[in-house]
Amino acid sequence: MSSPAMPPESLGVAVVDDHDIIHTGIAARCAEADLPIRVISSHLNVETFLAAYPGPAPELSAVILDLELRSRKPEFDSLDAVVDAGHAVIVYSHLESDEVILRCMDLGAVTYLSKGEGQQHLIDAIQAAASGDPYIGPRMAAAIWADSTVGRPGLSEREREVLSAWFQTESKDIVAKSLYLSPATVKTHLQRIRAKYAAVGRPAPTKAKLVARALEDGLLGIDQI
Image 1 (cartoon, rainbow, N blue to C red):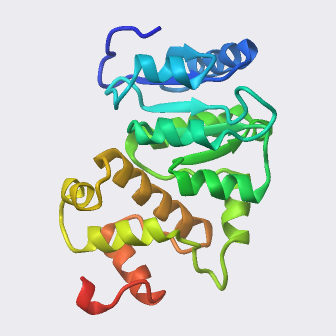
Image 2 (image 1 turned 90 degrees about the vertical axis):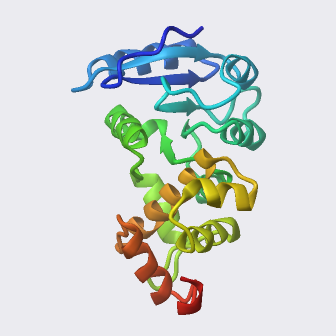
Image 3 (image 1 turned 60 degrees about the vertical axis):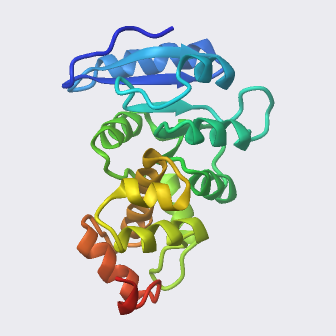
């Protein structure tokens, strides 16, 4: 159930989780944030969420998605569907294995949080998603670090492809068209790349810094810039 769009200074989220108590807890914690965050849409499954929001919605800063909606195993297809619809997804799950976290990141989640990490991490992640910044929780950082060697982030093939295309143009829209992705998906990939670099202690908050990191790591040559 959605409500009218909120003022620009407000943040709004959708929650997709099969437990009512999670919806209640998230709504209560969001309301207590320094800048109150409204849960404007609540769903027990991905199907009803996508029926309400088949594409990006300006009133949604992020979608908070449980990874176990119909069974006790990770439902990566649900995450894939919400990301493909152009939404910024914060996975909020009891699962904590590195493999699950890294798979979610590869599928396009902007942040992965364990439900045991504390709700302040969730507030910080929502605020970061709204501003287009990466957010790295403790378990996500550990998974990225384990997937890295000598301080190098483990970028997926698609992330490298987006990075290379972005270095050759000033427009994320052009990158999206050339790679047959949505602009929101391109933005998500870039957020995740920055998060991976930050997690290994080599932050790259600007495009120039990303270029420098990519050159250092041999991800592209001078002729590709």
